[in-house]
Length: 342
Image (cartoon, rainbow, N blue to C red; front, side, top):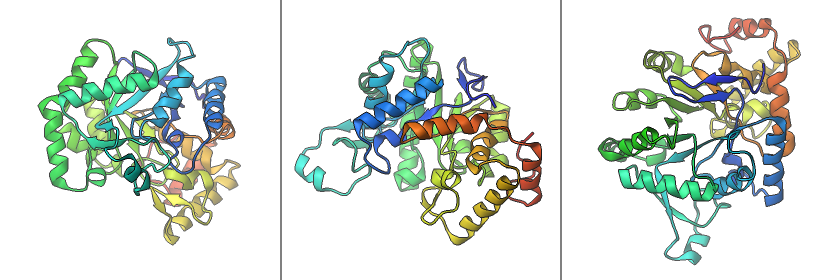
């Protein structure tokens, strides 16, 4: 599969390459990445042909945007494609010493406090703050980030922030799109049910789907992807390795959709690995290419900690997969029979 062939993203005016770059790792999501390593990773991606970079203010509390912006600022603006996210605002902590001692998300990120806010003014401020961290005056896509139960903690808070979005936040995004300063509006999805919740209220261009559609999960095929197809809504796939296990394999300590893999989950992935091995295909290759066989999916955006991981992702995209592999995965009931494959 050509990693850099372009596909139209839903009904939007934006076309994306099959393979992009997910920026969460550069926010020090797992381990602290030295600046030189972050720079080398981004350079390896650019030199390999990657032109689509996705990030968020949340990744490292601004660190991922700063690193990606510092690198992309030096590249031709006409070639780069950037998406970032809205929904949180960042401020200096009132007590920096107490903040440094606190247990918090992104402990190795920048020292800024945050609050969720999806109102008109907050969306506009978030957008301007991101432009400054990214050192650019335009991004191609803005994505409504983490407006779900898992991140907000209660149905009441979800309803409150959905009302904020209805009351002005979406109008801010639509205004930016109408002015031509962004090309497309999306929302991030981490769990089943979120797509339909959004489409009941909003007319969006695409969803960035992280975990509900991978080699190990296809629940969105039941209702949510058909709803997107009916509405002309495109899909980008994040967390394509199910947050780890589809890249590492079923090794001790492997992570599966943000948690340590259970015995049953490890066994299922081992069976997938065995099928892949019989066809001479790395598990990570199958994981990267699988979502792109769905006609709604424009791009997959795996992250990377190092130049070698970037180069391996490109190689995995170019690796040929025999049709018989998909036939056997379906016959063994390891992927759904109705999942689109060659």
